[in-house]
Length: 387
Image 1: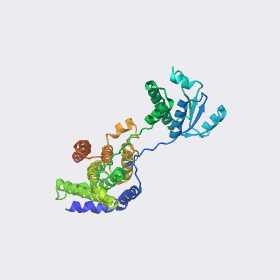
Image 2 (image 1 turned 180 degrees about the horizontal axis):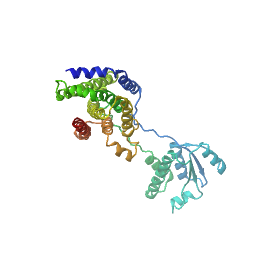
Image 3 (image 1 turned 90 degrees about the vertical axis):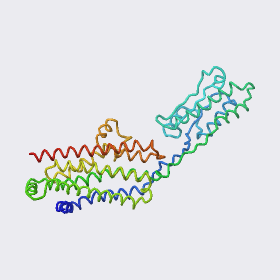
């Protein structure tokens, strides 16, 4: 196993450079372990809009009920019916919504409905949509109650309207499956793992390949008693050993920092996905090492490939934010499918056959990348040997 021993003697020279990317992963692990992800806490709470009501209509039981409902669901701000003061209040954000009740509105509402409420709002504020919903809900309910109440008893009708519009439905939000609970921060961590893995493998494996591909060393090895097949076999075993060491070290750090969460089904799936991605990154690194003539370019290539793939594939920027054209280009990289599998694992509530089958399919795509890249590398090796 002379070549195998030489493999790791050469690798020792790159330990300081490779340790930088291991250190980056360690820092990311510590940071992610202290980040509080709140995606599971999806409680909804109403935000009250600051509303001014300008009433120019005659007093009525109907308007009293309407104002009472709005005041219960919004913050009523008392402002004089003066256009300049109302505009100033909107400008300085003292209020976000002005409801103007025109003269004759109640009579029109009860008869022909030609008159409508007038509104003045602060542009591009989300709270105004909620206020619109409150007003429409009350008026629509009032129309139904008035139409079917033959007695026209306003005290009774206001009570009925208030009872209908104030009904609330209790909702229960299902907690995530115990297997995926607490896995959110690990998804982000494993996505960042793509950057470290790519850089480590390109620098490590690439260095080995450029050394063994030096013309003088190649000629000397060919004149030795060792067959080329045995030499390549030992290099191959060395690559697998290097992969096992790097991947095992990364997983060990994850288990130490995140503990039992890594031993759940979700954690094991993330680990399996990272192993498949490591194999693919190793194959790409093997191809780069075969093509690059010297070691000086490896560092630049490692940064370009790892950073480039990570930027367009959703490692640094979530895939849902990236444009469709970028994602189409990214789909031709293994990093895209690696991140997609991680995100899918993190979003699953219950693990079952229907949820797992798409994950396994996307994992196989990464394997296909590895096989295709390795095939291309072997073709180049054979071509160089022939030359």
